[in-house]
Length: 262
Length: 90
Image (cartoon, rainbow over all chains, first blue to last red; front, side, top):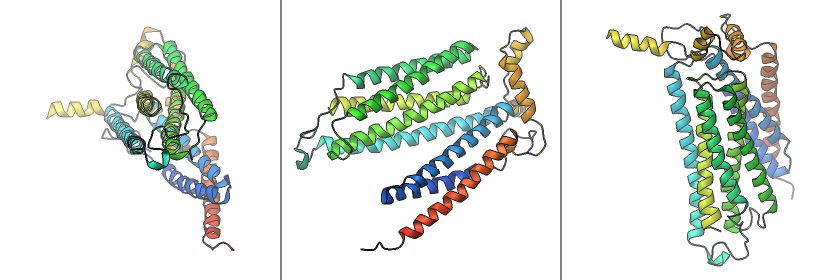
């Protein structure tokens, strides 16, 4: 590949990762069917492994192209920004559908659940206990990630490290508390519309928290290897945007499902 | 037209870290800067190696492992789909 060109755009090297990603997604989804039909998770786990290997190597290559080869000119970075914005927008629409399902079931409760919300017999979580702590944790993590960002922009290496470390710690803390809540819940996903809407919405949110925490951990590792400069650190900004999105989704979850719906 | 051309050239300049270069001149730089300069040198050698193999021999190991995994996985998926397409015995 050539690093010298007469234009400021990035024409990438031929890469195997789109193919392995598509193949891995096929193996993963067939594995899910096999899991549900034959109670065997092997193919599903194999598919997860291929997807993980693809993601690691694809994003590793992007870091190499941007940080080590300098191919992320400002026009390329603009494209990356728009890409991340559009991706997060698609995720907003994804969560919108789960909130629609929740309001569909809860605004006009059916006869089968007792014409009431929460349904008869369902013991919801007290919104002022662990869910409130989780809200404070995520809001706090929004502060720490912003602190990390300003530290990067001001070339303060150690404070950026601390801010990122704290953000990751708070993310792990949230996930642990939520896992405990799931364990302690008096209802399951199959307990009427309440259970399905609760676990689908909070479950997908939890997956996004794990993805966001992983993204921030990668940023922490890259920061320790001096990949970020004070004026060029888009990988970190993308992680921070994603993290704020995860935080906002939680706030909506908390207000509608935990508080209003409780 | 000339100003437009100048702006295009500015956009095209590769965005490697510039703040650390200024700091290096002043003599106050993080030790990580030296390590990353070695990375720059390694990855900017123009030898035609594609980016996914340019890191070293372990890149090839990971690449073959991933590709091999894809082949095995597709065979596994095909085996399940073949079995699932026949009706189960009553």
